[in-house]
Amino acid sequence: MRINILIIHTVAWSHYAALTFSELFKLSLNNNIDLFVIHLARTHKGREKIGDYDKSIHNYPHKILYNGFLEDLSNIRKIKLLLREIINHKPTILITAGYNDPSIIFSAIFNKIRGGKNIITSDTTINDRARIWYKELLKKMILKFFDFGFCIGTKQMEYLQSLGFKKNKMIKAGWYAIDYKNIFTQNKLRNKYKKINLYMYED
Image 1: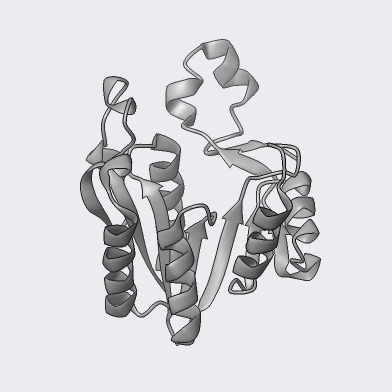
Image 2 (image 1 turned 90 degrees about the vertical axis):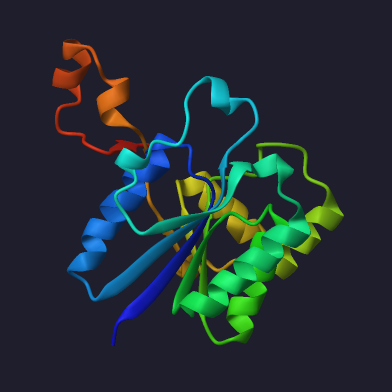
C-alpha cells in the first residue's frame, strides 16, 4: 500500500525548505511514498528585496496556492484553498508547519475527520515568548487533532509535552536545515564542515 503524504508549508521563497523537500522527495521514491507539498504563498512582504522564489531548487512535486505575499491572502481564502487540496489529494498523512495559521488548524481537523493522520512540526520552546493561559489551553485542544510531533530539539519536545502531547508520539530531529552551498562559501568553513551536506546539528 502506498502512503500519500501532503505537506503544508507557508511560503515557497525559503531555500532551506526547497532543499529539505527535495531531499525528502528523493527518499520517497524508494519507499512507496507519494509526496506533495503545498505552499500557501510565494513569499512574505519585505523578502522580495532579498530574493524571489527560485524554481530551479524546488525539485519536488509542489504547488503555490497564491502567487504573491502571504500577508495578502485572507484566512477564509486559505481555508477554502487548502480544504480543496486535501479533498483532491486525499492524504494518508498530513504534515503541517506548526499550528499558528487558522487555515492549517482547519486543515488538520478536516483531515482527521476524513480518516487521515496528522503530523505537526515544531521549533517552538516555552521561553520563546510570554505564555498566556487561555492561548495555551487552546493549543492543547488543537494538538488533540495531531497524531505525531516532529521537533527540532529537546526544548521543543518539552514544550509540546507541557501542552499534553505524549513523549512517545514525538521524535527529535536534532538539526535545522541550511542551504550549505550558499552559506559555507569560504574554503576554511567548507573543510571544517565537509561532512555536513544539508543539515546542521542543533541538539
